[in-house]
Amino acid sequence: MTRANARELAVHLIYGRDFTGEEPEVVVETRLNKEYYAKLSQENQV
Image (cartoon, rainbow, N blue to C red; front, side, top):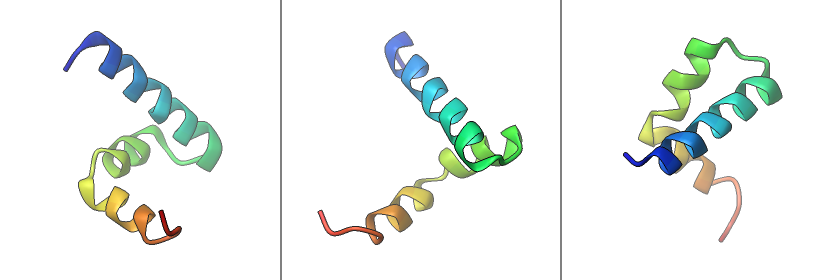
């Protein structure tokens, strides 16, 4: 993982925490799970 990718991931995790109010551990566990993103793709047609 490059530093740029790590920074982008960190920003997404911080935003997810701030937006949802979830505990940091839950945000990290959820966002690092590939199944989470598969569920998001079902919300909107691309």
